[in-house]
Image (tube, rainbow, N blue to C red; front, side):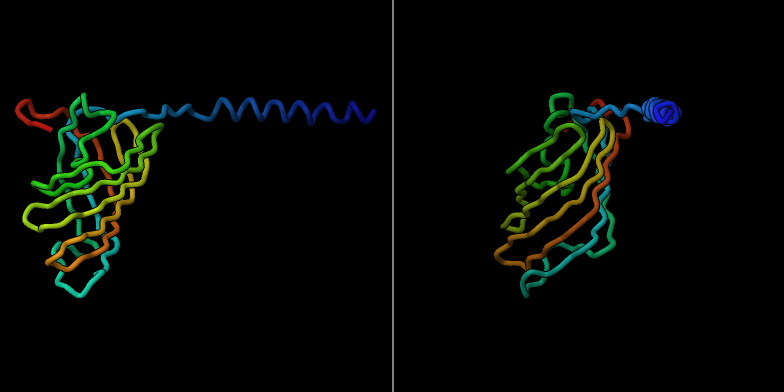
Length: 168
């Protein structure tokens, strides 16, 4: 008799598991960014002077920067490091690179023009084929200027095809 009482519970549990599987949408995890024109916006969330010099970078907490980058098909799996920098004329190279299954974590060393030092950046977040959402940090190392430590929120989205005459 007790066994018969358990049957409705087992049937209910089996049905609820099947229903849960049917309602959960399958999300495809991206392995690379989609080539095209990307718009990246960055909002500074923290800025701390790390020495007593006048900061070389002119940024404030709450400031927004938006820049555009053409991502080529050849760079889709490992974008040029300047995709994450956004400073005109800056030369950047990866120190560490991980971008797989929707997760991104990169470290970049950049040399800004006319400042005689480096900016070390770390980007940590997630991506889909047409979007990036990450936290970003940057620490400056300039001999003749004031150094800062910056934290920012980074949001990127693919906005269309690259202009025919635009280089990455």
